[in-house]
Amino acid sequence: MLGQICLVKIKNNKVFPALIVDIRENENIVVSQLKPLSNKSEKNVVYIGHPKGLKNESVAMIYRLFYISEKDIIKNLSKIEKIKAQEVLDEYERYIRIRSLHKELHNLKKKITLAQFNNTDYRGLEKRLSEVLEEIGYEDIISKSRYKVFNGFRVAPTEGYTKVYGGGR
Image (cartoon, rainbow, N blue to C red; front, side):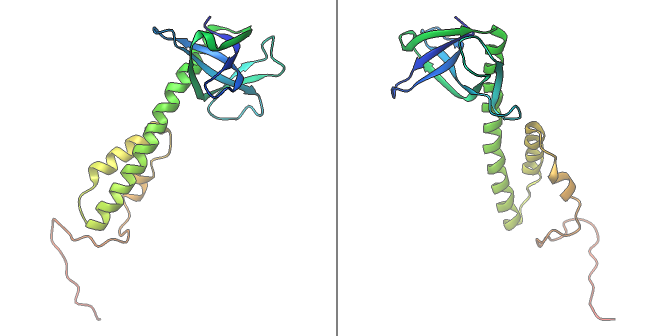
C-alpha cells in the first residue's frame, strides 16, 4: 500500500489525489497531497514524475500531509516506487526541522537586540545564532559584523589601559 496514489476524502469533504507515505500502528495512513508540476525549481515539493492514472506530471507537497483512515480512500489511481514515498517523508522531517530553526532564529535575534540595548553580554546568543544560521544554510553574517570598531552602541571598556582624550589640538 505504501507508494500508492489514490483519491482521498478528508474531514472537510475535500477530495484530492494523494500519495500514501507512511502507515502507522493505529491504522492511520499518512498521505501527501499531489498537484500538477508548475515549475521544477519549486521548494518544499518532491517530483514524482508522470505516473499512469494521472493527467500531468505531478509533485507531492511536503507541507500538506494528512492523517486519514482506510475508509477515507475513495479510489486507487496508480502506484510509484516506495523510494519516492520515503523521500517525501524525509523531506517533511527536514522541512519541520528548518521551520523550528527559523522560529529559534527570530527569538535569538530579539534576545540579542535586547541585550545590546541593555549593554549585557550576548556572546553565547551570538554563537548559537551563527550555529542556527549554518544549520539552515545561510551565510554567517554575525562573524563578519563582529569585528566592526563601533556598531552604534555605547560599550565601556572592561580590560586593559583606557586612554582618555581631552580633545582640542
